[in-house]
Length: 191
Image 1 (cartoon, rainbow, N blue to C red):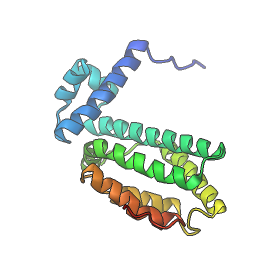
Image 2: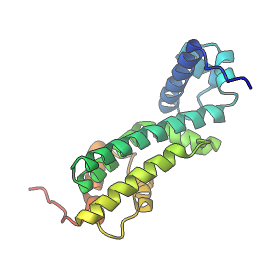
Image 3: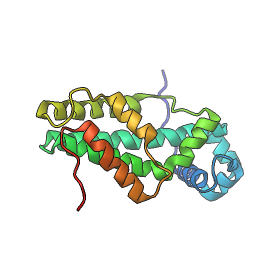
């Protein structure tokens, strides 16, 4: 039985450049951006792009998968801080805020994913992130800081309804308004 060879270093570099360029180009120009423009922005030949990603749907799916992996990494880092003694409610609120802000810049990528029907093929990162968020929620509920009926599904609902099209002040206000629905703390009013 032969072992699969590891990808060549230049192939790994090209893939990273293509993914970065695709994210930037879709964000700047929307889902209609062409593969030629993405290849040019990545500094690779169109054939190289198609060797890595045979279709635009494959490329957008890979960009979305990268976004999901980053969110899962962030959720696990927040859980690690909770495990080290940070308040779960504070970490959950901060995590929600970070995901919403990241979604502001990645909304074009997500729109392209919906348009093309692209989804990350492997749900391991989504499962990993969900498990970390569930553990944070449970820790906050054990502390009495997060309402006992809050679920991971509720957090996903908030992600999907966040006002990512609004300016920063409106997004901050939205977070201030939804936080009392998650936590047992009263809403703070500004003086």
